[in-house]
Amino acid sequence: MVASQNGWIAGATDRLNTMATAEATLVRFPGGVRSDAPGQLLMVVAGRFHREVEPLIDGQCWGYAYRPIRGATSISNHASGTAIDCNAPRHPLGTEPGATFSGSQIDAIHRILAAAGGVVRWGGTYTGRKDPMHFEIVDGATLADCQSALDTMRSRPSVPPPPSSTMQKGSTGDTVARLQRVLNDWYPDQPQLVEDGIYGPATEAMVRYLQAAAGLVVDGIAGPKTLAVLRLT
Ligand SMILES: [Zn+2]
Image (tube, rainbow, N blue to C red; front, side, top):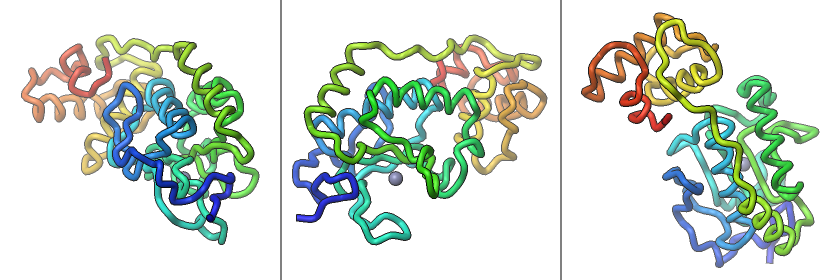
């Protein structure tokens, strides 16, 4: 039997989920993850990433794939269902984490990794080529280690995201940056917003665009109905 880089058997037949969902979201990880503790732990991490780092985008998250590590001969941890990629196109292989994540987002990732007790490793911390989309079970972690980390994470509620209350022209802060990021993801064909946390004319125009498309009152104010469409409430 062939093992992936971290020692788990590749092509595992106990991978029951072909459409695993991150907890509390409907984001698909095509291919899924192992159905037992390592996979469940990765989905808990993904759920926290969604709430505390940035919203996961359906279609941009990946799970099982039987393939070598890109550019190497060893088998990828994706091949044993013990690795996931979060918002992959946004955080390309080989880029520095700071190029696509803000400092506070990187802090949030480290907080999540700490909660997982060191059982989950982030590709953004690789010493060589960085892989900031990638999370995996560390080499040497046992099933019991994964179960213990899972129990710990499930017993401690995650830090809730900042509430998204009504935003409009002149609003500033992390919640505005989050709104801008989601709008960019929703409308990749539109001129992309600078995700600077400042609700200026371009952000207002994009909100108007969304409101028109969603059949809402077009006022350029991101109020409860608009935020609900974007699942930001
Ligand atoms: Zn990966």
